[in-house]
Amino acid sequence: MTRTPVNVTVTGAAGQIGYALLFRIASGHLLGADVPVKLRLLEIPQGLKAAEGTAMELDDCAFPLLKGIDITDDPNVGFAGANVALLVGARPRTKGMERGDLLSANGGIFKPQGKAINDNAADDIKVLVVGNPANTNALIAQAAAPDVPAERFTAMTRLDHNRAISQLAAKTGAAVSDIKRLTIWGNHSATQYPDIFHAEIAGKNAAETVNDEAWLADTFIPTVAKRGAAIIEARGASSAASAANAAIDHVHTWVNGTAEGDWTSMGIPSDGSYGVPEGLISSFPVTTKDGRYEIVQGLDINEFSRARIDASVKELAEERDAVRGLGLI
Ligand SMILES: NC(=O)C1=CN([C@@H]2O[C@H](COP(=O)(O)OP(=O)(O)OC[C@H]3O[C@@H](n4cnc5c(N)ncnc54)[C@H](O)[C@@H]3O)[C@@H](O)[C@H]2O)C=CC1
Ligand SMILES: O=C([O-])CC(=O)C(=O)O
Image (tube, rainbow, N blue to C red; front, side, top):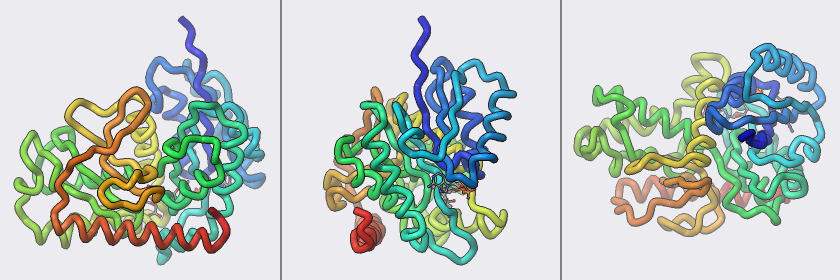
């Protein structure tokens, strides 16, 4: 049976994440090896020529699953019929900036894009916001799309999740595939909280296996939370291939489900779970099945974790208040 292609819109398609992302979408890594896709590349006018060059290279790969590429600078065209939207296009931070410094620079992008999604996307649209500050940009887009169920707007903390798994594997000598149930809580920012108290390494509790609170507080958490800045320092540009990889992971997991006994981390609109005010787009532990996600309930949150979750959530509330003040939500 021939499947109808899934329409995938990528904003910022001519940027460095876009370049690392599009080829993997077209080769089947986003949705599955048997799912045909149509790509819609949304750029600003200055980015259109480079996007055309990328489209030429996509053609040159002769990907069997790629059923078409459209390029546009009009959000209404870019999101028409979109089933999946990856909102990557934004200004990346440079040395010395915090992600929050980008709020006003990028906020203006996400309101019109949210409205264009509201007016043009398919009924089953799923949105992942990658552009920073990702959580609050997702909130802005979601607020501008009142006809789309709020839970379809998500923000990327999967890169943080993957970074945390990699750091924990390096510390313990475990294989990354042996690490399960890790959680990123809160904001995709330096306040985020990577939580290993419920994580498992080859079936054993990770915090007990590590048994080193000083390493946790002084090395692990800051290394994960400040990894973005460390990459900028080392590379002279913000993470691109790892960010694209995390975007692929996020959507793939959302659509295809988490493995039995495991969960992932996604920035999603809070339903009030774990004391996170309803509506804030905060990272939670989630399981996914049949294209839907659910927050993992009933985790015991110790004092160490509580203080850190609260600090990150406080920052999210401040960002929400700031964009409210700017009239963006
Ligand atoms: N959530 C996460 O874990 C991560 C987020 N990021 C963020 O992703 C974003 C993109 O990063 P890069 O690709 O490195 O940046 P880049 O500067 O290489 O590319 C951004 C692209 O977006 C385009 N663009 C700007 N405004 C647009 C608009 N209104 N509509 C469509 N396209 C638009 C630009 O023309 C450019 O081609 C940045 O905000 C960066 O901070 C980066 C790494 C990880
Ligand atoms: O740090 C940045 O600006 C880019 C980013 O979000 C990351 O690498 O986590």
